[in-house]
Length: 88
Image (cartoon, rainbow, N blue to C red; front, top):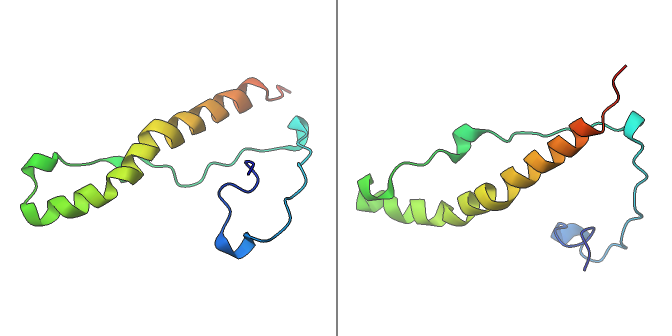
């Protein structure tokens, strides 16, 4: 399994692996959609009613992945794109 197939939808599970795209910096844009801190704000679990703590716990894997992988990875990708951009 490669990065091209690791996270694909079940609809594409049997599709052939796509070719590696040719990315030309002068013709390529990086578009980051819908990464908002407001979605990541969490209350103190201990202050929640017991009835809400189970829902809080269900969301923990999402929040952990966002904090440990998605946000840092997105920031690194943005920094790399900004470092390579053309200055006309």
